Amino acid sequence: MAPEELRGTLRGVIPFPVTPFQADLSLDLEGLRRNLRFLCQHPFAALVTAGGTGEIYSLTPEEHRAVVEAAVVESAGRVPVIAGVGFGNRMAVEMAKQAEAAGADGILALPPYYCNASDDGMFEYYSAIGAATRLGLLIYTRDWANFSSAMVERLARIPNFIALKDGQGDIRALQRIRARVGERLEWIGGVGDDLVPGYYALGIRAFTSSIANIAPRLALQLHDRATALDSDSVSRLMSNYVVPLYNMRVRKRGYEVSVIKSAMRILGMPAGPVRPPVVPIRPEEENELRALMERYKPVLSEYPK
Image 1 (cartoon, rainbow, N blue to C red):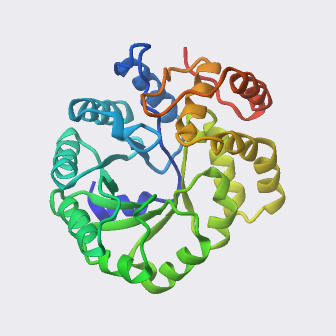
Image 2: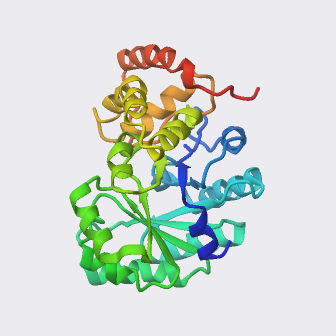
């Protein structure tokens, strides 16, 4: 998919599928394929495989390739596949090349390994990834990749850089960046489902969703109601479903993955454990999550047998 073609699809919900593992922490490719088939039954804008929720930093290069290939096969062209890349320049470039060779439609660049890099170093990192592929490049501003509006304007010189995924949640800063860069980029709400009201109030019309792993209908309803500026409906969805789940996710670092995987297991979906250093949720939290999944029943889709 050409960069501008991919850019044109980025309106709506973009799931971040988990990467299922077996009990021994090996890759569960068949479980991944089942989950991808489930997701691809729904009208999503795209999906990001091997992203943050997909535990990219725990994957070997061979596992990363297998995950991307599985997503490309199972999507069968129905949903654009965006592959996460990261680590350092050399590794990210190789991951981008192998993702393109596997048939991915775009690349999502996560922050590099070095958390104290200068803007010049960060620019070289993202430029190298962009130059390594003909695919559209999305940049994920999370953790230490926290850019000024001037830096985003500079990054926008990368020819195939098409969209910025906000992972900071600073609405004031994002507003400044968008005012400076304008329509040069697509803007994607990327902190989580719980910030949909804020993003959509700014005029953004796409967000990345981890809740889509367990409740695709809920994620799509959030987009539809927020797009229609139906604040009452959005408020109900947030208070009934989204906020309680995110209240659990913020309790410990890594719980944004652990909670979603635990919810999937409760619902009978392949997920498996998390890989260290991410830790599983506690037994008492598992019981709390089980009760929350009972509340989720009205917004769940039937998972194929």
